[in-house]
Image 1 (tube, rainbow, N blue to C red):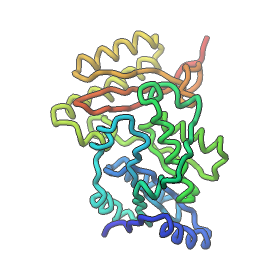
Image 2 (cartoon, rainbow, N blue to C red):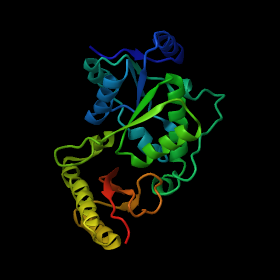
Image 3 (spheres, rainbow, N blue to C red):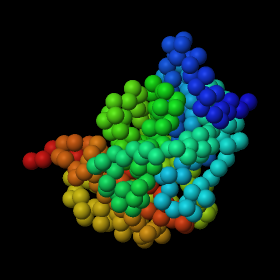
Image 4 (cartoon, rainbow, N blue to C red):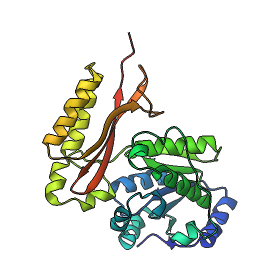
Length: 285
């Protein structure tokens, strides 16, 4: 049994009208498809907390800086619908680009501050595309709760900021990253790694977790990060775009006593990998 596919906003709206009339709580899991266990964990969380669950599947052209990356992004709609069937998802919303961005569409949502560092430096315009499509999908689904993973940490904080700033009536629920047995965070892009590259990729989470432990133990941050960058290069990963310690909420400089996040973006076998781990910083003094 596959999840029921809905392709138009009018059909989705009719279903939502009926659910809202019954006072049901609606959860949404926004995705770009090529679903894996990480996505399914979000769906499971939504099913546990909501009366109705919508999964959206839309490969958003406006958040890709590289046309080649957009063209190569895995598209597995039929398999995705099959995966969602046993979870009893109420609708798999699969709009086409014209449904999301009709020819009259001219509005761009841009979230200042938090979008500037890290991904903002290396993928200019990416977060405008993310914020715009997420705002559209939240409005289209009229969700009470929206579920996001923590692997895209900067994206998660950006969505939280947008929802707060625009007073959008939706709760953002963050769920832990799901990892393979060797620690690599699950990602649809992992499908594009060669077997050899996939083996090398295990060095990424191992390096991150080791560096996090060292910083938590009180070792100076910059030497720890420099050694981690060297380990990644020696393991055959690269080029490295960034490996930085940032404040977990603002993505600015770490603040003593506040949660921090160690974030990385690195290339391997022509595939861009991102990951992050939490770092508990000691009080100053």
